[in-house]
Image (cartoon, rainbow, N blue to C red):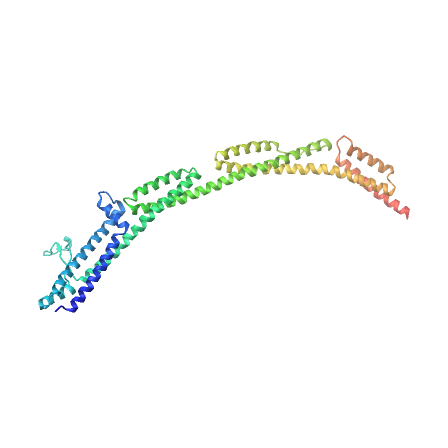
Length: 400
């Protein structure tokens, strides 16, 4: 009669083996596994880091299949023994040992000479139970699966990274003329070739060479773009400023000429007209450099251009203020004299000889073609105002 204990044990082991077979088949269907196996079989297929890391894993996979074969062989023997209608004590003992005891002979492993005694064999033959063998297989499968899935992730991600890196390099190459771009493109091509034989090393190089390189050239490209924008802005604003300076320079020239013609003993302000000529020539050079893409030279030269333009503007504005003040004072003295004469007429003292003499002399200097001595006319107008005030008080007192 078939023993139910042995039948249940056989069924349990068969179930475990079936699950193990299914998982092994699925693992072997992972694309990176095919890549590793195909490359491993080809002479010179795998190289470097990937070869070193892969060979022990592929050996583990082979051992796993061997382990399952050993357990399958055990199950075949156990099912045959358990199929007899009557189990003799010898068969029962054999089944007990086969299904529960150390009945699986592992492949012989060499014993290092340093671990051998005189009578120690060179090869170690070890028997373990099916459960122990399954525990070894479970641990080996976990490590092999972890490695293969890691390779799967890195191989798939690596190609995506290479494609993305190439796109970024091409975009930057169209925007700048950095020499580093060409070197990085060459590095990326080397890594892509390496990925077919040593994807682990290729992934490492991508992370340590291409990624930092991309960040570097992106930063350099950004700085170049910022510099180009700054250079363009410098030239544009400098052009606008030069027009404003030209108008300021012309106004200052006109005021200076007016002062030379109308103000006696006129002392012109110290100005730097040669700066304006230099600024015009310099801006033309900056614009030429900008068109040639010499942005660094434009930025450096542009900053210095603005320093000179500020010096020139300050000088012109100071001179303009000085000249305008002289012209305005002359006009103001004319106005004041007119106001005072109107007041004198209203008070009936306009015919006063002193007032008439002062007014005549002041008008002579203010209105006739000769230049106006401002200090003299200012004093005359002030005397006129003082004399008018005195006469106005006398006129008022006499009226009362």
